[in-house]
Image 1 (cartoon, rainbow, N blue to C red):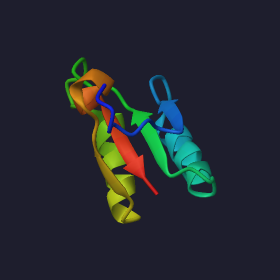
Image 2 (image 1 turned 120 degrees about the horizontal axis):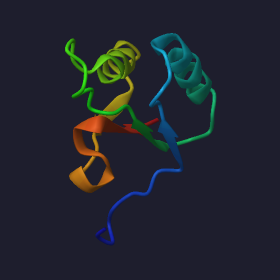
Image 3 (image 1 turned 180 degrees about the horizontal axis):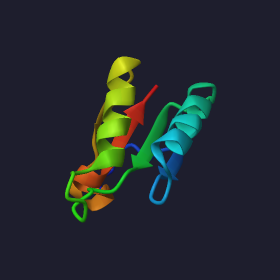
Length: 85
């Protein structure tokens, strides 16, 4: 970790959740007082259909025009998002 890296105020791991449950969690986040949250979705490499949760969260954030980026490799890489409110 470099000295300029921003540390999230909250980390949410969505492994094992349905997209419906994930939406409820994400909706609750919008009402919070967080500026930076890390959302771990997993990479979906074990699914034949691809990364369901990752695609769902990415679409959710884009629809609401919430700023986000893929996490650094050591913070989850393609399996996590850094979200900024």
